[in-house]
Length: 410
Image (cartoon, rainbow, N blue to C red; front, side):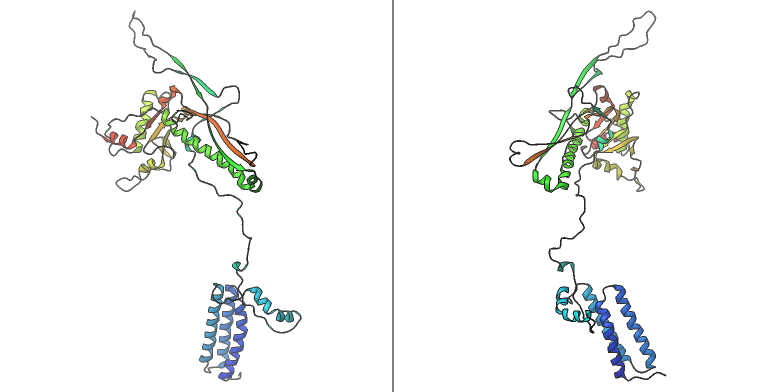
């Protein structure tokens, strides 16, 4: 049977053990190490319980537990950047350098380093993970430009002009009729007309210093893209809304004839009803030529249908198909709100010089000032030939058109 110790001896043993554990706890830097210390304390307590064989040790064990809890709080405060840290790591080493040297030469002793080193203690810290790319700006999506067919205009001697000949539909007469024996045949009338359209130019410039190109190569490379996006954004706006005056393009709204709605008795008419009505208005008399396949619309106008629900709270429009009444929905934010265009996109063509030209040059006094000007330009036009305009219809007031479609037939 092992020797029964007095409470004083037990306390002395506990204090020695706690001193050993304290050194481990002070140096603990991870959850795993702290857990190991706590496990060691529990093991020690269990061993003492076995040795004391029923001796009253609650006071000594309570003291051990209190010290362990206090030490755990100190660790928590230390790891959370609390008040326990008063010296830098460098200061601790300088203060205890003699003791460290003695240990290094084979001497005995211990050195306790308590200072917590943080990133903030390193002055003028230039380290970090640098992202290689530059953040990009957001612009409207190139919706209409992307869906229309494009024809490249060569660099040959074409004068930058598109020439074409169309039927003069306003003056033609289709006179075919049933003819009785011996009667004169009716006479039709055909007429043609020549048309010309010049390519229009879209451009932008940006002055930049020579030093910027020399010292900021990555940012300088973004400037070409910046100008390119500026030009493309203006092109997208012109393709939809250009009024064909001055240097403006002849946009799709300006080129499309207006749709005239009629009372149709459609209960709670919505955008899908209107799209089908407009499509049928195109094909009813010219279905041999046109197959309308596109509805141009803004997202705000489209929301009225996308968010609409039936009496059972089910959404009416299934946007997963991307179509509406057999028409591909082209959401272009340049489209005016409360307006749409329906048409056969095969007949709306973009004629353009290949690519977008980026150049650099000097203007005015830039040579003396060590500056240069970046320039971006593109030449193009949107052409819906006169004879093809009947393949398109525009609605400039969707709400009013829906009200008319819902009205009872007279």
